[in-house]
Image 1 (tube, rainbow, N blue to C red):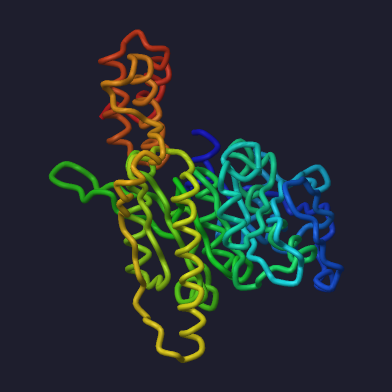
Image 2 (image 1 turned 90 degrees about the vertical axis):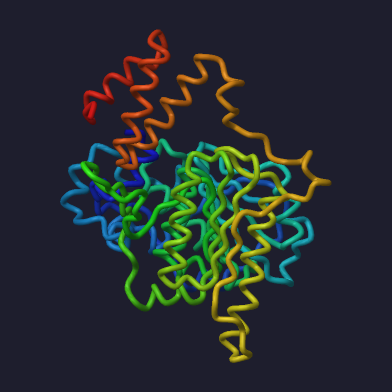
Length: 395
């Protein structure tokens, strides 16, 4: 399995050692002088957050004992002094007004802001921080730890709004952010904005088994937090699930959104971008998620003040882009098969097979693998397909 999905499954060994080499952030650091530096720049963080201690992460996620972790072959801990973070602070920030904090978990090695998203951050008064070298190639618990360190550090340097601390990410980073927003609602006080990937706290049925067939499920990836935190997650925190028409993770995102509604999430939004594949949205669609998160903030505040806010969640399903703006639609990463070369079609089948297999949807994985071998027998992906069929069985 790839490391991205290795991290996504509940069967993952609860990996990590009890080593926390760096000192943790102290509460009195909240009183340190605030910074006023703006623009794009890189920082290092001097101290680990208490929340980023590896045993603490494992405990919160319900991933098992440290004994299992010690036997892992994966990277078990990190030296924060060797990590760097990309920061973006809007030019209008002076420190006199609190800004929201947007913590990003990228699927690749770069923690910088995507393209014109800076315009959205400027408009909505959000400070960005994303760890470098925190992509899908690194152990998941380390990616979570770096995000927790970032969330703890930035309020010591900037005047941040304690009710607008958001966590987000795309693809594998989206899966990380979905866990961070649910398991650490006391840290990410605004909520989560996972894109193109989502993990869930219980298994979700994909299809009911019929005669001679077993039911298929997306697996549970982590444990639901205890009652006090669960109340925060479901009754106060805001969550936006974003996917695209052609995103390979669209189905699980949609299904898990519906299951979250059933479980009592009050302030949750689903956005499906027309024509978009497995790629971050453009600035226009990115902003729709920010607006949803911030609009919910007022609703939560009104409810807390007893001013009669609506208790039922406002859910946004697929949104249609106005015709006048259709030329700005995000490009489709995965074109139709008719527009693909044979090598590209084979690669697409291979990607889908990996996705299904790593989410334990073995029936669908076999279907794609067999199609690849049959239709593209000379493809470079055939040896891998044959290996996978041997591992999961030909059915």
